[in-house]
Length: 494
Image (cartoon, rainbow, N blue to C red; front, side, top):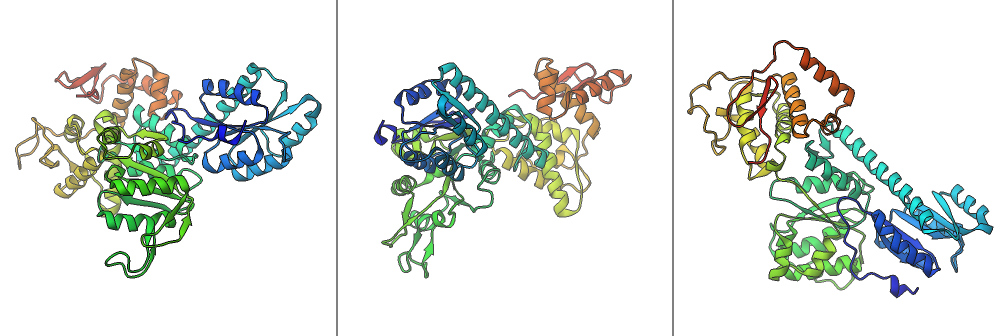
């Protein structure tokens, strides 16, 4: 197989839920073809190389998870190639391939960092079993990284907050994306937290100690945006006296986050595409090319596929950015996270002002019923304004901003009728029972999504059943769901 055969013009599209990248380095074409046939059925994207030098080039451009390495490559010793691969890609799992007569070489390779070995000739079933084992190992590592991040934040993953199933799926994708070098396209409505997702990707992976440089592509005029990204030579841009480097150079070794990339002018799209492909840039007004090593994360709230069809966004740039994509769900699709998000914002306000405030049940009901078109950003603003408007430690429905509708809200200035503060223990009870109801009685799944142990869940259910008098009385009003003797607002979509 020649180098040209293994070269891929456009990067492969990676499935968001599960992606692992396999590099097969073997001079025997039959082995390469067998791996290319078997690996995709196990969730691997497969790259091929027929020499050590070609493999090194592949490692530079791709986030490789697994390497299948022939120990008898032409022009390079097997152990030397193994050491080079581990040095260039320390997190990669290396499986060595050798003949029966050279098993001792495979043992030496394992001592030098290889995960396992395959003795040639081997069957497709043997290859499949070994790749399945490696995939399980890597997925467990990803889950462990995600759990460590959740333990750190206690409320979500990285800077993101929420325990809804949609967010748990998102955390799994971010945990994998964080340890890849692929570009990521982050999709979501305005205010959902796309930059927080980008920061979680950057600061959860090997780039955490390198620069994270965000730029809003829609906030600058084209001339300034070009100099901001690529830099400029003195006297080229009006108002810019000294020469200055661009963000693509400043972020060397780290991450450049292109917020609202759909607003990027079409001529700058071409220049950005060239920079991503060639890994070099030229400053505005300059003549010298500068090599760059930057990971690109991009976000948009517009439909880029439609923009491509309308000719306002380059198709080739779209494919370059959309190697891996993730979607941030709008707040209306994860209403069960509203109490947790509100508590997070109230705690932050308390640290800033020194005054603690709690949310009354009537205010929580209003917030759960609202669609939040501005998403988490609007919820944060609402919480801040409510803290500013209320004169006491308790936030009622009447303290919420007037643009949040509520048919039952008391007239302005009038006290709410029988305001009720729900104790934390009762909110916990409502959360547990609601989760079980939504999951059709699946208590183990409910415990996992709530972030508690199954023993804790069963103990609390036993406590609830033994209470003769419930803390909250049944309520059959429309919009409330009743289970046993407890009531809570429905979390279904409006």
